[in-house]
Amino acid sequence: MSHCLYCNKKIAMSKVFCSKGCKENYFQLIAIRVPKLFVKRVYVFCNEQEREEEIGNFAQRHNWRLDLCKNKIKEEAVRLGYLKLSA
Image 1: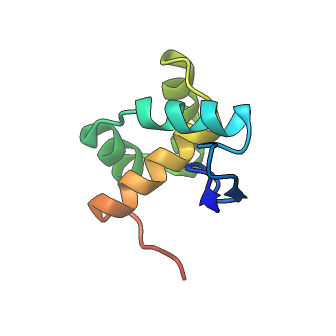
Image 2: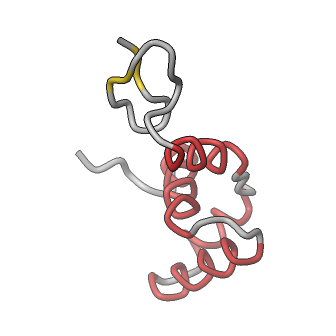
């Protein structure tokens, strides 16, 4: 058995993704690049409401899905130390 690269579901060995949606999400997630200065601005200088608005504008400007963009920005914020990983 193999696992889907996006959602880690078990799938047949001949497949790479379990669905077309997983394939699209995976490649769009790879394409999303978030500048460090943007992450700093959003997490240091913006409150929660401004942060949501800035992330929405960023996703719309680059034609990326909002949920994937939020996830990528949160990952970067954790990696750069602006957010603590909650257990």
